[in-house]
Image 1 (cartoon, one colour):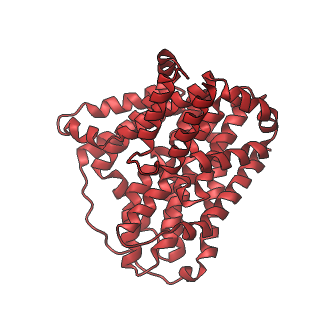
Image 2 (cartoon, rainbow, N blue to C red):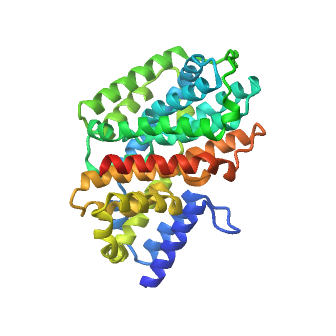
Image 3 (cartoon, rainbow, N blue to C red):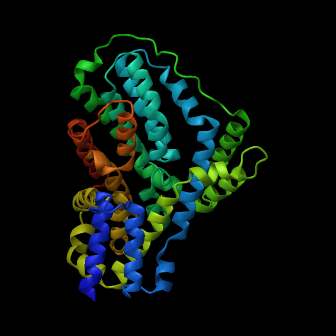
Length: 402
């Protein structure tokens, strides 16, 4: 049966990495869910064990952050902030710097995928109106969203898993990774300036008036207050999932906004995907596969910052960053310095998202949104700067943790 279980796990993780299975209309969520069902049916993991293997704190945190982000989006918060910030730029170099810095900062607080979804149309509109090539600015948005998200526990889904699993406080996590993220954002700016140097001739321009942004003031005020309360709770050491959930509950108490409008925007498939992946990795543990694999590489990974960083980055691009973190979770707890190992894992798996276009969902959101406007951010085009930025930023992270 071990061979059968191994085959199911390999097919599931391969499908998750690719995003589909040949000749089947299945996405990552359905692949993971069906894989989970097969593992339970074949007794790779008992149903009760499957229930307990799901990290409900992580699911709750992700669910709560979705509600918060949806309310901010409906209120016009992200579009308003982006439009105000971008008006500080008067040259191409400044415009790129403003996009990178604002995307990086906001991604640390509101999930990198959300920022890419909200910022891409605005960046495209400005670049095309100014008759500039949109590609460098789209690259700046994508890589900075990934880099900035590394700075906090709520910046991306894999950090949420790490934050809950490790027990590292919000402040300690940010204190360790914020400096690395800031330096890496600057590196990203420099690399893109160099790769696309013809685009960044210092010709002054005026940012055009963009499409009218619809602001829903009562919801904007309420959402902003809820966000401030949540961040304050994080800083003061309250439970991270509970703090986020309390903020979400506050936003769901409303006389104006219909609940259906919020729940319609929630990415339910992502929640299913996470829950199913927890069960798949739980099965890897219950079948003894993880013990066998990690017994061969445990000392090799735990005793060396470079090894852990490089292997994490490579695995993240093979199976995606969330599954990579879940696969590493059993071994990290056995490392001599687990806190440091968790932080290295967060840094490497997040920065690895910039290695290729398919390295993170944030990249794909930017590319697909641009494609709808006739702009092709291809795999090769992304590699020109993304790969170099990822390698340098991971190198910076390794230096900080040595």
